[in-house]
Amino acid sequence: MEHYDQKIGIITIHDITPFRDYLSKTIEAIKQLENVGVNYNLAIVPNYRKESIITHDNFMVNISKYLKNDKPNIALHGLYHEYRNCIEDFHTLTTAETRDEIATGLSIFKQVALPRPKVFIPPAWHVSLSTLEALQQTEFEIVESMDNLYLIQNEVIIATQQVLNWDISGSAQENKRMIKENQLVYDKIMRGFKPNILRLALHPPHDPPEALDQQLEIIRGLGEVAGYTFKTYDELIQTYD
Image (cartoon, rainbow, N blue to C red; front, side, top):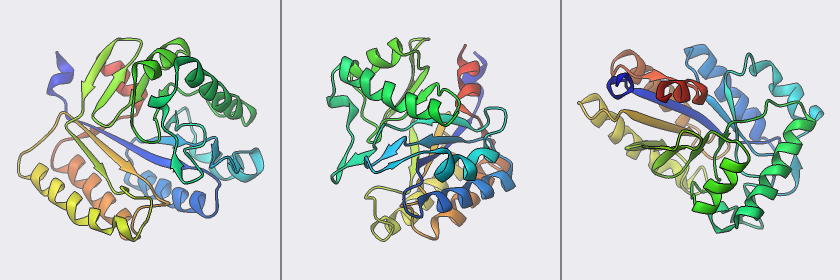
């Protein structure tokens, strides 16, 4: 089948929220991706830490101009993402609890006229059977886990051999070591290791300051030299239909 011959890159900007200076850092990353001209996805947190709910005035007025024709795609990135210094872990919830959390997040999206997302990204990338059941019942199409992409309605599991991620701690200082680690992975790809699906997870609020330059360099190299095509999640779904 055609999709087995393709090298697909999935870029997602995570942790999007009006909390503190997070949104300004996110918008800078968006601008740079727009300049490169690649497709990407936005993972938005409806009510970060239960203290930063998105509204028209604190969020949409700043980001709406980047939401053109449903590109980039929108993902629901949990409800709170974290609360009282604990990451929101959906895999520990029942199906009913997961549905309730998702419904609350979707209601917040609706109030600010965000597109209804088809993609769900748990804050810790952990997925259980209850998670999948709740997402199927609420008509989501894709959920990300640490190692896989689940095309829920198609009942397809796509193993992702590699995720380039610069945030492993929530601290930009502690995440500095990921610069070297991701460079090693990128060098390996350029020498011939080419996973069919390659995910890049950008976390502007938590990535080291020098990460954005490296991310852009990697994205250019993957597209121009390694032959990757960057797709939104909508485009990925079409690839596997």
